[in-house]
Image (cartoon, rainbow, N blue to C red; front, side, top):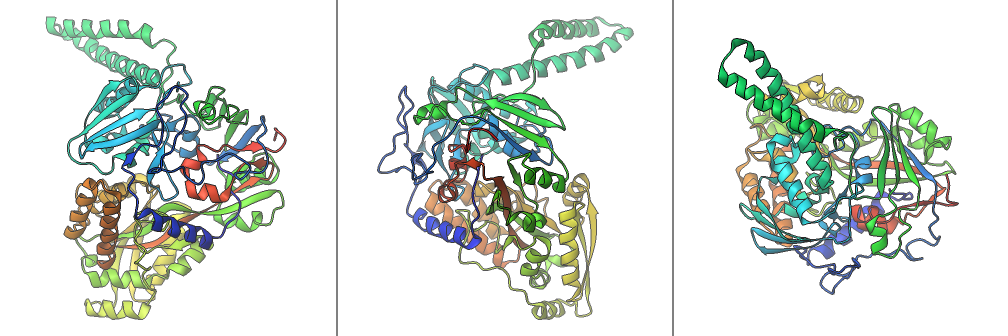
Length: 603
């Protein structure tokens, strides 16, 4: 959980730029931050020094932690499926209550913070040795060890299990158990994005026993279906059909008692985190109780972590109702709708903070056919959009003008690029040069949610000022996916949320093999850089590759990048334990290791 205070965007970005400068001289692909001993002590070396935010003394927070209380918050939707490798997942914040990752990201979204993986080293470009944390158990009592990690990775890679994250592990050739707490990864070719993937969905560590139980449920469901189908064929006779049915029936009889009492991880997640699921009511609420045996608190000499007795996440779809609950003291924390900022900014009972996020909103062009094949048209569109006005009008001032893909807080952001200048006269000139002096009509697709509709109307109005009629269709997610696959647009709403390893977005949007390209972009220089970035395991060299990639895309007006996300959050002042400076420096690493507490031990 995070409990920051208000901060200016400028101050945040200054901190980020300074951190990025220091990063340029460092290489984190060999990480030996932790000693491997039975006490799980954290030992930092001169090569890998202790992070500035790795402290829990009075310089971290002057008040001492107090045990007790139930932390209450609200979400717009129920968590969804609780196995993060299955879809849909509606609440990733709640997912982090009971699952932990092998590796965490830092303030620049680099995968540098060891967690359930305590050590990793590239032995060669296609081999990584990874040591695992000792003394960790899942909350169902099963052991966390090398066998558990191997089983999970093999489970994700097995298409029978329906893991949407399976494609992310395509470069994995094998994972081998070396000893109880060591695994050896072998890749098909050099894979620079490995650590980034281990900081993402495949790196959420699930109960070994829970996954085994899910395999039983999977096999039982398959056997039941086969038995049902084969039974219908028995009427036609035939010894072969009879034998197949008898085998399927035997499988059902064998698996049925094994499945008795099993609850799928989709419905009841089991991890090693600070909280244990106590109650799960789909569409209503999630209730968690404190994990009294959380390994992390013991490892740093703070066994009382987490300090609160539990967490209650209530589903409240309507933003105004969520806010009313916060102001009435019925919940402790809330992600604030940007339009509601004036209602919370001066509330004496709340801490309110503004934080840049790792998401980008953009408009994507169809380069394969239509008028946007012409760079002059793409330039005209991009220069016709007033990004400052977009941020003010649709984001209530909370956003940062985007120059390209990676936000300023991301380690692969190219600081030399500036947002495209608003210049409607240049747009008119470019359109005339492209043969559209009398005007141009283009097709468009936007989501049908309120935010997307508002953004689409604002851009439509701006384009009209330079003689471009943008005919927009607002569609649901399924229809929008079909439109993207069929390239049924000239310009459409786009972007990327949760930008961690840089290859995920770069490949997804700009490589022919990307899951969201569909042939609409084929920039050969960009493709070559994307492929180079996948295999370059030196982080300093890899950073330069992505700087150059952004430059190539920027100069070709590949898309029209609009703004980087800025979020607003608030919590009641009875919640203590957040150090803003340390939180911004450590980000995910900090939030996973510094739980908050109530001032008097109760809410």
